[in-house]
Image (tube, rainbow over all chains, first blue to last red; front, side, top):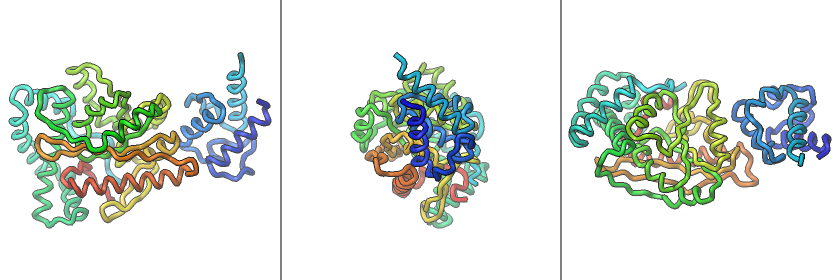
Length: 85
Length: 294
């Protein structure tokens, strides 16, 4: 899956699931603050990523995702790993 | 804010050991007689709890003053009996308890789907005493409890019965238990949550309950919405000294078209409706000893 397609898919489900304006999503924006995430929302985010990309997110990994860019990088990395033979 | 702090009074391990000793040496009937004195002690000296339960009977059940006083004592006695019954059943002590399982097929349907599920309950009645019936569902069951409630229980029961097929998840202040619950649901297991109490800082929603607004924790309902698993409301009430009535409601699940928020609202509404209906049927078995409506 191309990088741009993944980013577009991530942004689409973030807008739908967390009901935010698409304009608020920029690569350097803070993920938790922009989406207003609490513990339950991180669970929600993990479930949405799993259902869209088919891999499980370890909850401790969210600590490494400060910005939207780091979320994209994480998903791209794991989608890449998933399609490896 | 309700003043529930997630801790039970006294030393639960000592309490369970005493109950176990009395039941095995003196018999259940003798133990029930002793409990009358224990209940009277708490009735007299646990003033804060007694006041809250008295107000519950006066304001929420609309009983007169004398009846509320009598019912407050009765509430302590039934609560003590419930604790004793729980020990008897979970420790495998010989007993003559009988059960009526209302809605067992609803729970069987959830278990047979093998897709996980949530059983929502509250601090009313004594579902643990009938909880061994859940073993008939033949699927792993996780029970979420406050640390203070669980303290001592695990040590006691494992000491006399060995490990059981019932996994306890303790509620942590850092909310890490939410991930453990999520993992259990991902493994398609059943998770039993009490949806009436919350800790300071938890998200809550207010619902009209027994004629007055009360706060309920959002967490259990949000988990059901996130994982889209079926949810059943489960309660067990003592109907006579030896008979329990277990209720398992028809499952509710988030629809494809339904937003998370809409489902949380709907599920909480159904839960509160079930809880209110049951506590009107069994008013003495309300075991929240703090001001629930504060």
